[in-house]
Length: 409
Image: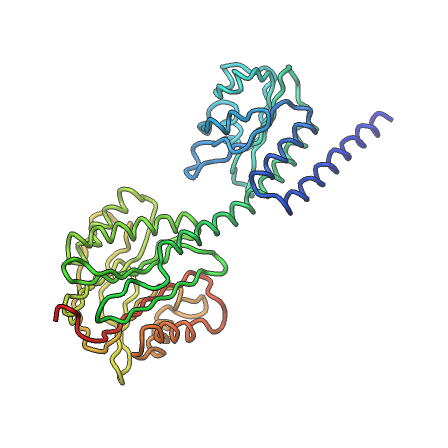
């Protein structure tokens, strides 16, 4: 009879937990959801405290994200190193840890000690086999946690992990979209004598990422034209893209040599973004708008078109991508842009497909483009290359057409 009562009690706990987590997953935001889970966890396990700590971006520290009964952890921004102390050991081992008698020899979190927590139980939060955080509970009186307690806390951790992944994925995409929109204006800056248009489409499968374009007049009368692609996707790639784009603008103020600009940008990436790889093409149009100087950091060659003539690729020998190898040499190439000629820049998401070679995609794009208004060129390229299915990678394109003489002339 006692076994049946115990089993019935466990089933009732699981039913209550299932009910609240399913409801929470449907209706609550991440912060409210985690708070609700912790409240219910304290009730189910008869614990006095509960907390969730998530791994930071570097995977070296746990950051207090939600707490019940230990709200100071979140308010004070507690960060704990992986591999040290109670929570750090849970994260490092990827398995439950319980401590019946808490003291300074087994816990380094000062809030647990000053709060008078006597016993703790922690389990890892997992994404597959990867630890993404730690969920732990504590009691103010000594307690020996049971196997049932461990299994119940594991179940809560699984629910919290699922909710966290889903919410952070949506938050990451929303934040990246907002960042991308703030960094990529609807239309590039107007420059007298040039007709300019651009398009940006986020990949439907991988979400937004590091594709970008830019066009800006310089005090010297030159015009900077850039396009690039930071490897990866999501918020981190978008943030890195913003830093690279801003740095390129700053270096463009110091030199009119695109190879010099990309060399400086590469040093910046090597030093401050050591795990980043990016392609970029930077071109400088001279004040007369007749001559174009270009340098490529592993980026696809631009296309130039004249009225009534087939479009052609500008021969630009690509150097290594940004972040690939320290001290790589960079070269510049000169080309001309006659009156009414068009220039078209693009990222690989427009032309690259799993079922065809990259060169074939570039040839298809070149064949589809004719010199027209900048907006028409963008529309033509998108219609020609994105017909079969939506983009699975970010796509950025930038079209420039000479419409007349610049003000200096």
